[in-house]
Length: 222
Image 1: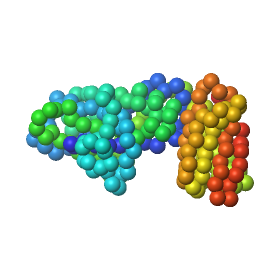
Image 2 (image 1 turned 135 degrees about the vertical axis):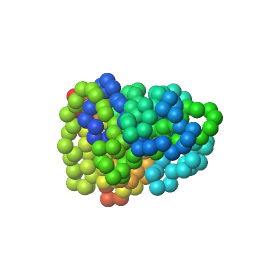
Image 3 (image 1 turned 90 degrees about the vertical axis):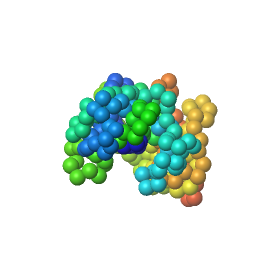
Image 4 (image 1 turned 45 degrees about the horizontal axis):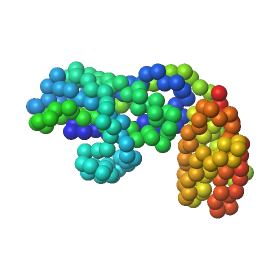
């Protein structure tokens, strides 16, 4: 491992008020003689979106090696054939509150010299229970069943966000009950998640596009 990136889909996590989140990565073996059991590794929240099929050391980053928060959780690695467990509570809190900020994590060695490396089990590792895992603790929240309107667009509301799916080049807008714009995006396809503020009891969702024009009242699940 020089650096590893990993991301989890938190769109339907069903938890509010996250109290603890732990990222577990299983070390399959050493990959470098410069790696020692006392080597320190850090997990950091990524700040830029990426795709597994195209990510490299330089792409899509603005700087080589990845764009990530300056602060992370640093651990002393226990060795190989064991789990590295990182405390990522603050990053997951942010991602649950604002799904658009969820870009996953990057894991790196903290060594300033040499090339220590290990191999982590990936999401397609042959042994399923050794694959990356994100454990989240907190208060459970009920999640509304997605509702499909006459236009075929699905709208799902939770306590913290509204997810609109089956979009095609649509304009999505969210207003408070006084008509103030809370969120707006153009040319949206597939799906989009919009964070909801705790202070608002209800919203108005408007979606317009090709053969689509509907308005719906949104009430967060409390």
